[in-house]
View 1: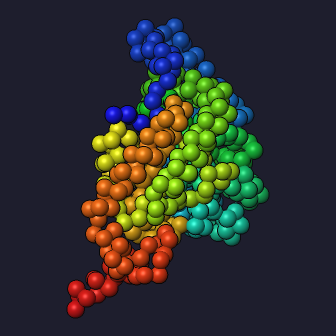
View 2: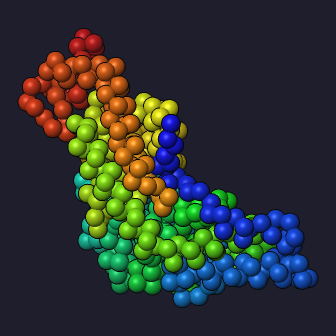
View 3: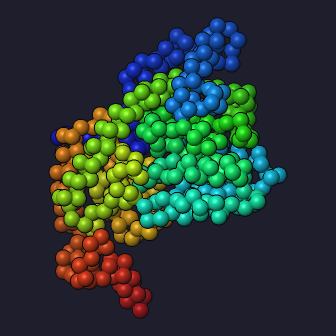
Length: 421
C-alpha cells in the first residue's frame, strides 16, 4: 500500500538539514542565552542569526522586530491581547474577519468578557473579505484590525495590502495571521502595512515548539508572560534555542525555495482537483478555484451524502493522511465556522475534508489518491441512507440539483417536524 501525506496544513516534516543544524544546541551548545559567559554568548549569537533569517523571509526592517514564542497560538494571543491592553485608554474596539483562526477568535471572546467590543466583518461565498467593509466597521474607539493572510480552512488569499492601507490611513494597529501562508507565499510586512504578523516554522519544514511574532516599532503591546527580560521584555522565559535555530534555517530555505515549491504544488493541486471532479460526482471545492485567489497547497472538499469523519478514517486505512477541518477544531468534529460563514449547506459542511500538498508529493501520489478516493466515496455512499434516498428521488443534491426531491436540509426539517407531532 502506498503512503501519501496530504496534511501539510497541520504540520510538515522537519528538513534533514534543519535537524542537523539543531543538534549541537541540544548537547554541546547547551548554554542559557541570558548567561554572560561564553556558553551563553554562543547560543545568543545563534538566536540573533535566526532573527535575521526570519526577518529576511518577511522583509522586516530590522531583526529586532522578530520575537520568539512557543507557537503560533501564543503569537496570536500576544498580538491581540497585547495590543488591546496597551491601548485601553485610546479605545476598546477591534475589527476582525469572521473567519479568523480560533486563536484570534477565542482571544477576542476572552477580551469581550472584560468589556472590549468587536465587529466581525463578513466574507463572500469564497471566503474573501471586502476591504471597504473593514473601513465601514472602524469607529473612533478601534485599536486593532486583525485579518489572516490565507484562511486556514479554505485557502482563500485575503486582500491584505488594501486592508493595510486603510489601517495605516486611520492610524490603527494591523495584525496579520500568516500561519497558513508563511513559507508558501511571498510576505512583505512593509508593503502589507502590517504592524504585527505571526507565523509557525513547523508549517514550512521547521520544528514545532517555536512561534514567531513580528512587531514593528509603531505597534504598542504589553507582555502576556511575566518573569525575565527575554525577547526585549515582551516574552519572558528561557528561549527554546534548538527550535529557534531550526526556525531560522527553515525560513532561509523557504525564502530560497519558494518559487519552486509554489510551482510544484500548484501543478499538483490542479491535477488533484481535475482528477477528483472528473471521477467523483457531487463533489464540491470550497473557496476559490485554483489560481491567484487560493494558496497552491490546499483543497477543501465537500463530498455529498457522506460524512467527513468516515472519509478521513478510510483515507487513513488506505495510507492517505488528510484532515477533517482545521487542526485546532477537527477533534471536536464540529462544522467549521469558516464553512458556515461562506454559507455552505450544513450537510456539505459535514462531508468536508482538507487535502494539503507539500514539496515532496508527486504526480504518482496524486494519481493514487484520486483512484483510492473514488473507491472510498463509492464504499461510503453504498452504506449511506442519504445516498439511498437520493437515488430514490426522496432528497435532491445541493451541489447539482436534479429537481427530483427536496434538499437534505429540507427533508431533515420535515422529518423532525413530523417526529415532534
